[in-house]
Image 1 (cartoon, rainbow, N blue to C red):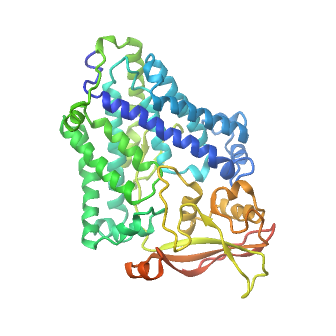
Image 2: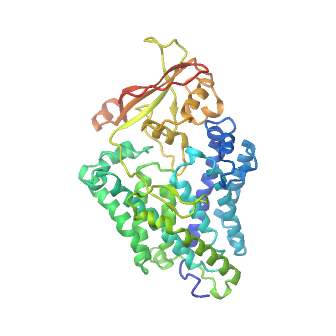
Image 3: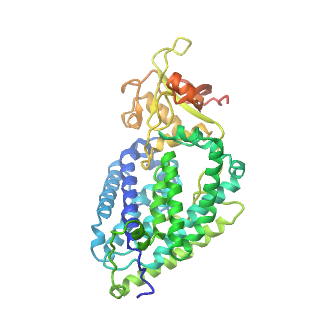
Amino acid sequence: MEWFSAGGDEFARQVLQRGIAAVFLIGFLNAAFQFPALLGERGLLPAPLYLDRIRGRGIPTLFHWRYSDRLLLTVAWSGAAVSALLVAGVPQSGPWWLPMAAFLLIWGLYLSIVNIGQTFYGFGWESLLLEAGFLAAFLGSNDVAAPVTVLWLFRWLVFRLEFGAGLIKVRGDRAWRDLTALYYHHETQPMPNPASWFFHHLPRPLHRVEVLGNHFAQLVVPFFLFFPQPIASVAAAIIIITQLWLVVSGNFAWLNVLTILLAFTAVSDSAIQAVLPWAQFGSPDPAATPAVFVVVVLAATAAVLYWAWAPLKNLFSRNQLMNASFNRWHLSNAYGAFGSITRHRNEVVIEGTNDPPGPGARWREYEFRGKPGDPRRLPRQFAPYHLRLDWMMWFLALGSYGAWFPELLRKLLAGDARTLRLLRRDPFNGEPPRWIRAQMYRYRYSTAAERRSEGVWWVREPAGILVDPIEGPGPVRRRPPAW
């Protein structure tokens, strides 16, 4: 079995299994804390109504049987518990089939959630987590050597992720081609973090160097993941460093963290020992690999290679798709991010009042946890946790007006406790306001001088009304913003 068993990759296997399980843990906790308010029985986009619409379409989810918030929480907490066991390495200490069963279980449970998550789960990193979790199921336990075919499939996943992201950029927006993208990106990204203001104010020549470095890391380096060691380890290290740069400069849920974990698939034990000479890694005897394990892994490998044709064609298509899944199981997906860069930042600000609308009305602002609001408030770090409502508010400001937003306003008018828990601050302390409205603002980062003199991180100015004042229960009528 020496041809089947990878040698010198035990560190990579441990990072992949425990790291991917840790991201699943975050995903399940995220579902437990946010899904009922966003998509539950009385959520903004109720899952039961969606399930009625997709019945008979063959979309895999155990909620076809029935949906209830209690069942959703059972799924989420069960998935979190199994994920925590995998992080601790408990199933990996048993026979080869035990971690396989554990990973396939959490993959199936999370797939059931994603497939009814609608727009709130329409992010590329959901599919990335599902694909990574499926592959991790076939890495084996501590008693068998890591299968070489699975490790190569992980490298293929990292290649698609990085190379696809690089292609979508240079194909999609002139700002990536003329190296000016980072003149805007740190200011206009969906959810800035505490360091984003400082990154934005770096010298413009350095921003151009950053874009060049990004193109090199995404369009050139991924090919070297398939080279012999130590070249593959060096390529992985470059990807890890560039992803750490993104972790420091923004809030992109678990996209960057998961990419870092996946890149370790190309880092050999000898490379780790070159940095950490005291590190020691066990090496299971290839002869001890059960034949049935080999058969199962090779069958899974053949299936993934069969599915690989669609994303491979997509990479070289003029109409490249970004963050698309080519099958209902979210396996062998197309990835990419920021194919276009917005030049200005618009924000939707929701306000309520108990006064009759007019010049004398005192409007009070609802504050979200992550998205910019109060200009004096420094953006917070939330990634790898995903603030789904805050992200959708960013898309809303770009013009993606969905059915969930009028429902959000109705929930706020009713003082709905579940919805209010998604926010950072309710100016009415749980009591429903009499009137509510949604305003548009144009935001920009403050200059260093404005920061010193006024203590603000943002400067904003009105850009129009998105939703006119509405009173109590009633239709929500949108007015086109004036930007």
